Amino acid sequence: MQDEPTGVPINRATRFENKVGSLDLVAGESLIKKKILERFFIDLVAGESLIKERAAARFNDLVGSTDVVAGEPLLLLPRRFRQNLAWMELNKIWRTNTKVKGFIIDKVKKGGYSVAIAGFITFLPFRSHNKRRRKKISNDRFTIESINPKRTNIVVF
Image (cartoon, rainbow, N blue to C red; front, side, top):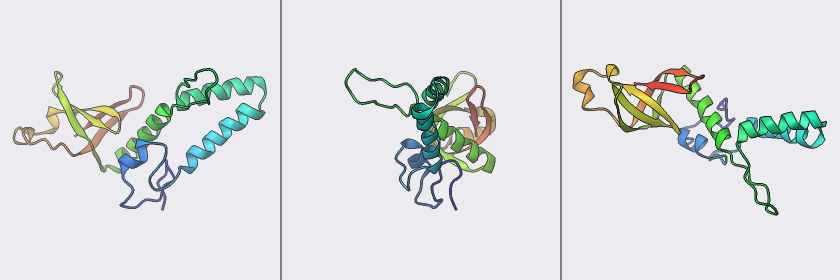
């Protein structure tokens, strides 16, 4: 059985951090990523001028900006691609109601903690913990309570 967004076989050796940490996946390359990039390159090379402009804009939105000095080979920054991949993985984790690894960064004035999970800063409210447990907040595993895709807002408990 394969992981839906990345196409990587699901097993215990494949960790979430390894899948979203870089483009070179530990268990193998992503089939979806290859197909998307193949379409962009076909449009960029063989398409008409209007199609090339649209493909270039979509490619920059997906991959991120390209910073190149004249005479050097093209360097692609996959920041946005990795962020989109992590966002899809977090949505999948939220739908299946499983726990995800993260760590507490700081206390927030609005009544909770900020928690780092897969490159996103999430919010852990005090209301999700009773008074006894408030002092024993785990720095390890969290369950995603809600996700707002428009604001990239994630609440955990």
